[in-house]
Length: 401
Image (cartoon, rainbow, N blue to C red; front, side, top):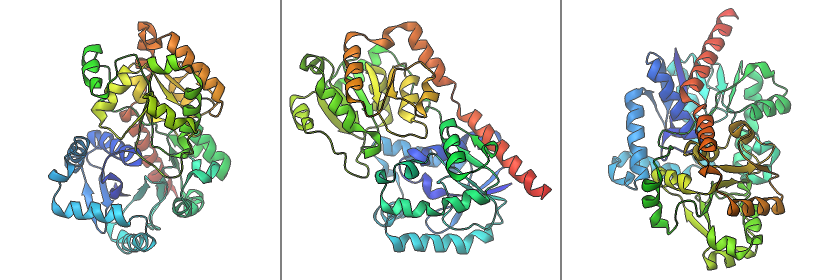
């Protein structure tokens, strides 16, 4: 079975779609190295096997350690420069699509796995689209215009797809409802926490978070790209409403790089930063993030809309409690183990923060074990098996037709 995909998703730090693509491919190839994956990069196709995935993983580790540039060949540096500077320009995208369209037929693919919603152009073979969420439909103001324009062709792709892959029951229902697609032909292959996200103990964590001038159990954590959909505005407003004595004891640590759009943070933000209770620390390495997860009193995740919610499962995998927005895909992750709050209810979030100041939920061994058990129920190998079943069903459908 020869399967095509866009390997440019695996360039640079493995986050979001890139991480999902890598983990699914890795889990599949571990058990089925005979599957022939062909990836289209900047302008050419190459084979993707376990060896090439190992090289990608090593580059990602180097990137996490801040030394990616030193370990990359010059041609890869040039490619990364091209992608970072030109990826959003219309003519660069047009060139990319043209190269894809001209070369894809020569690959003799059995199937194209569109890990980023839809292929760059019609691959001429049956396509399995991965649709993570419909936030661009529900909340178009949360997305740049060029992304909305790029996804205009998704309806056409879904209509012709024999199956659709997604990452939560929440998204499965959304896809069926909005596109009128047969729900029975949508399968869920959820993500899982990477192995690095696990409890290492108070001694290790205390030592590793000391660089951030915080101590274990004495801070709140927010993790996510700084963009409107993550709803940091509500969280900061809620945090500003609690007493200063609580803020002094429980600073709010915000982890995440700058995304698209204006955060529209409340006027109180500058004062909170000045007093030292609200701290933005930007993007950090996974080892540091693991330590911050384990040491936090709780993760606060008020996102308006998620297809899954990776920080939630990662934090639980470190044995730490979570509070997240209600009636979202994250309900599937926590399965009743976490308090939930209406995403935009400032007062309710303030109330939850006040409760956290009075208790340390993850300090209860039995509750912590439940969190760890629930997080471990998400498995890349199980999700990979669902993808394999999807491949087989699509190929069988093609033979029958």
